[in-house]
Image 1: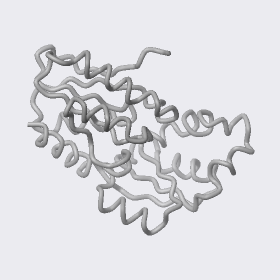
Image 2: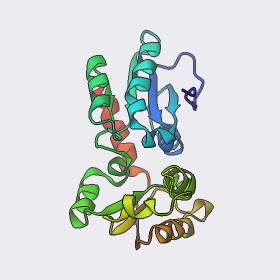
Image 3: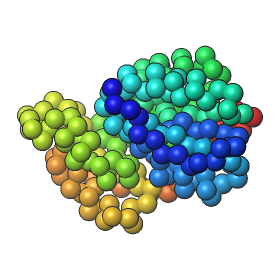
Length: 211
């Protein structure tokens, strides 16, 4: 197993450790810098593990075990992320809070907005800034579609639209990238500007709950 790739804000005396998914590292750093979270260390696990979610819970537990006694507070910036409740079992064992919701789509859009989107059209494939930037590598190559185009129908035949939850679509021409991503799936694209407010609120909720 390859060693996890980490993004760390080096502060040896930090009071709080945030164990996070690498797919939200950019947004997490932006929110923490803009908010009054105090001294923070961030350790990110590979975003690619969303394609192999069985690896997430054991790796998070290993991080928690290594950090105990070194921090006054540990937070986890993950949803369930396909672990089937196994991540929650780990966090319950250590009495640690994680972000609310099953995945980052919920806390980027906000719970109520995301639930309304899901109710309006169940067959929605969601994109975030990270997925737009890494669509070919994570989706087309990661799921084997580039090598075996016949897999496209197997994975996406039940989807009816692509919803791009845009945190900052001004960077890297992301709107055009999202259009290409949706086109490669043969699906129409819709864009919803989320910014980072809902994500900042979610982080604040777990911070307060962990005090």
